Image (tube, rainbow, N blue to C red; front, top):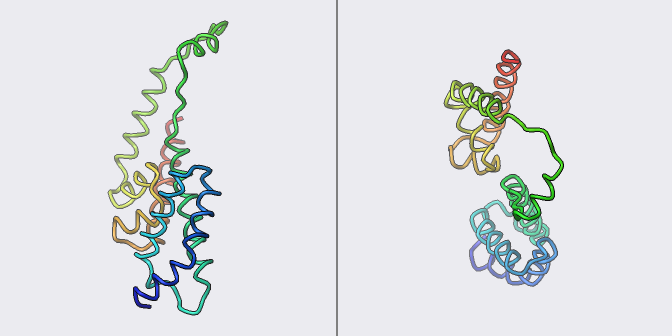
Length: 167
């Protein structure tokens, strides 16, 4: 498919994409960003589109997947910020004190175990932990998608085995 044909397909569905993005995000700015990301991804993978199939379904599925990945990453990184006044009322009447030192020691032990993993399984595991999608990890490391999934699975399995030995 030539770039001109692809652009013609794309011009036909642009209003649909903008409306769909707005419906997904509920925010005009985020919707525009989602449309732009979809355009970039569609241009990157235009060779994967099979001429004669439903372009609208292909592009909206791509948009939905991008949105779901972004939302998943956003939730993973989301932190709650609370004003000091409301924090006072939340803590009022609470008499227990938690020892954060124990958590820090446990986290240091976990990080030590992770750092002992083979580099080829540690790197995809860290990237996945940081919120990268499997496809992004595969592209960055230049390995097949199945390899990334199996390496992350192996890292989890090794961590689980070693952490059970600690407790």
